[in-house]
Length: 248
Image 1 (tube, rainbow, N blue to C red):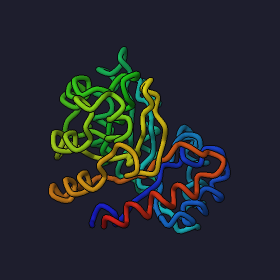
Image 2 (cartoon, rainbow, N blue to C red; image 1 turned 60 degrees about the vertical axis):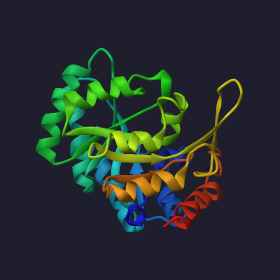
Image 3 (cartoon, one colour; image 1 turned 90 degrees about the vertical axis):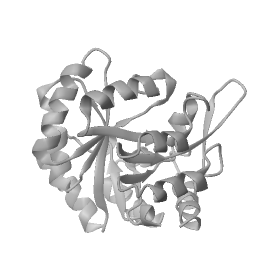
Image 4 (cartoon, one colour; image 1 turned 30 degrees about the vertical axis):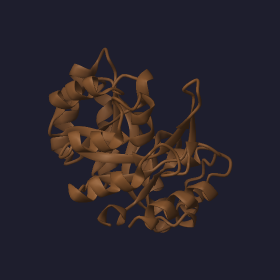
C-alpha cells in the first residue's frame, strides 16, 4: 500500500529523550526511516542549530518529512518555521491557529507556503482546542486553501464524538485537502477520558481508513503517534508499525 512507503513517526513520542541521536536510533529501532520533528527536539528559531539537528538525523539514515505541530499566531518571526522545514527538505508543516489571530496568521502562512513550496496541515486537537471541530476547520481551510489543508489526527478526531469525528468520513469530506495524517488511536472510559492504544486496536477502524486513503490515492504525509509510555515507547510503536504493515 503506497501510504506506507514513507511512514514516519512524530518525535513527541520520544519526548523523554532529548538527544536527537538517541531519538534517531529509536526511529530505526521501530522499523522506520522518517520523522516529524516537534519543538521538544528542535529550536525552529535558530537555523544554525537546526542544521546540526538535520545532520544528526541524516547521519542516522532518518529523513525529516515534516515539522510541527507549530502554532502560527500572526508573528513575523513564524516564517522561521518555513525556513527550517525547507532546510530539511520537508514539504509539510502541521499547525495550529489561534482564535484571536487566525485571520492575520492565515494570510501570512499562505504567502510563506507559496514562497517555500510547503503545504500546511491544520492539526485537529479534539474538542478543547480551536480548530478541533469540522465547522471551525471548514472556515480555516476555506480561508487558507489550497496552501492550507487538514492534518487529521485520527484519535483527536474521534474524541469529539462519533457523529462529528469519524476519521473515515473526514477523509472523504476533506479529500484533496488532506495534507497529513497522524495515525493515533484511543479507547474511551465512561467519563470520556481517553487512553492511547496501539493503532487499530482501539476505536479507529484502521482497515477502512487505509482502504479509503488508497481509493483516493492519498499522497500526504503519514505519521504514527503514540503518546503513552513516554519512558519506553519503543515496544508499542513497534506494534503500531507492525499493525500498519499487516494491512499493506
